[in-house]
Length: 456
Figure 1: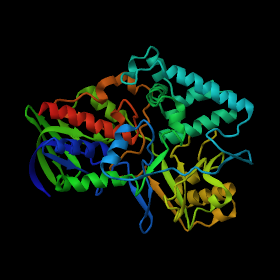
Figure 2: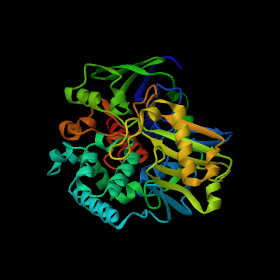
Figure 3: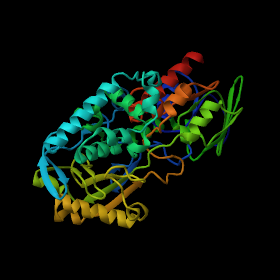
Figure 4: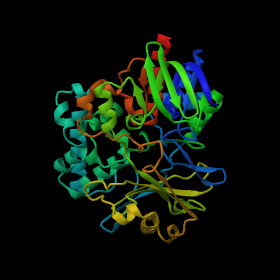
């Protein structure tokens, strides 16, 4: 499709937020055109083919209790889910000592356990004072937004072991160094989730369940049903607003719409020229925003051999690359896949990746295999394939999980969500509950669609 189109709503971005909004609006009888810069749908969900008919999730991959919007959408689309594999014993490797354990709590020293527990208790107590829909209104909002979460961990833990575990856990959750993330943002996320346990645990937590066929299947299914309303390979260059709506210019189409939904992270929305210019607060927010830039590394084996040893495939370690490992195999176990995460900037105390690992993909993969061999034994030294999904070099997406810097929440408050005329904002970042998660993206797509439907 190319040329000129008219629609009730133009949606910019075919990730979960944009496609959910388009789906809701078309079900309400409104005309929609979705413009996507990439040659694929899904945004920060993408399937990585590891073998014919077998995929791993290159982006967002887990859903869990309390994520009602995306769980309902998965059900409505007729997709299947399966539990993340954690059956068996997990590995805890620290200072060269390997211990096996079950359950969510690794075998820390008594001092580290007490230290971790007091930090968790204090954080959850602080989080209860943060209104999740208006975190800037918390009594100590400016103080908490003026420091990083990583700095809080450094100052308020006494043992090296607890400090490292907290840093590791939240590096994975945030997709970024906790020293780049606002303490206020993390307190808001903790409050929204109902506690730290939900954020970092598998069973009963945000990592409990996966989508059979990969989470990109959600976006692919919606896009297929929307048909030619979705235009791929068509980055939007300009949005020209007037009293009747807006003209949206993209590489393949110009759309005249009564309302516009920008379903992109704020940093990505800054690529678009707006006429008239955006309000100062919104423009400044977009320019200051950044997302985490974690990479996902996959080691593929002909079978999940660790299960034969009674191991779950999960590990917490102090090794150079594989600080956290989890079984990412398909539900039928036809292949074995182990997953870890590597950030681009190190992650504070005890988690600084070397320049060689960060800059050289071959060195990074070799170090990954070496770590897996240390954790799981000689069988791990011979994967049939090694794959990586790098979010630092995505052409149209500025990283993965939102890692809001200090100061942004209290300085820009509602600028993240306030419409500008008939231009609306919807993404995982604009959610008040499950912000940064796929569920947040889906709930925001619904919220904006409902608002626009009332105005049309």
